[in-house]
Length: 163
Length: 200
Image 1 (cartoon, each protein chain N blue to C red):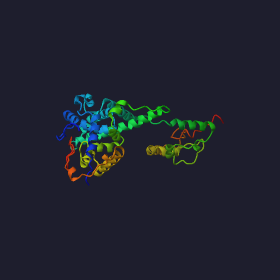
Image 2: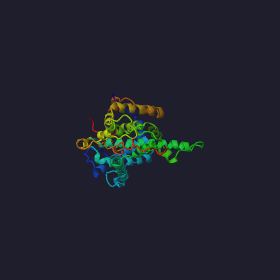
Image 3: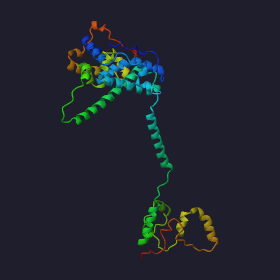
Image 4: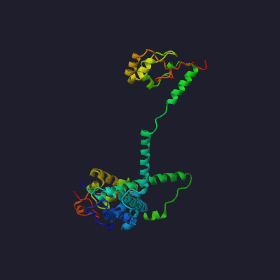
């Protein structure tokens, strides 16, 4: 398809209008704005900005991977303390997921004064062969240790001070 | 027509200062006129061209030599002018809000003296349409060269030119509608002030 052409009059008007508002000769290259820059590289402002962003990103990653873990033990401790004070059996308190997994065998709430021999055996299977061996050779005396094991505090036989 | 520099047919070396200076000398007048048509303001056009060369200078080490440097500079310059127009529009909205209830400010007499109705009509066009019109009818590129310069199809260039002719003819008169080339006019050569883009 042929390209349309402008009339000579229109072209002359266009050229006159553009030439009137724009100089015909370029300023010297040494006077150009880019000539005042040191070299064809990002300006210092951008370098500072990029450096700031990089440092911030590294900091966030470092905190995420190497920072301290969130301490939530105090929550469990506080709940247990309160349950002791009001006299609620410790077994009725919903254990944390870690406690659930470790104490999966003991689903029934035990009495306040019962020792937890089976619970300890479940929690620490690594020491069971030797421990069983010594128990078999020695006198069969179950060692009720209310404070041993993970859930020892939960099943404390101490009566509540409020009662 | 301007006594503008001839085309950049020599290969350029990205990052080389002398080559960039040469590009600046050869392309500055063409870019200035193109941006003058887009912005409608001589000072703003000069500012935009300088800003475009600053951007180009920063990107100069990453320039791909297989590309026409004129097209590369043209794109940077037109994008800079488009950003300028966008900012100017926002400024004018703010100005209108500030002047609510007061009589409108008159035009700058200096601006009115130098700015012709042709430039005003060009500045009212969409930026890329105005740029294509100036490239075609002032700088003497053909549609194929403009398409290659801008990385668009010839059909797009043709549509933009038709849009420009329609708008200008409504505003400036039927001279600007354009006419199909006659056997006589086909022999007339348009001015060629540059030519970094070769005819395929």
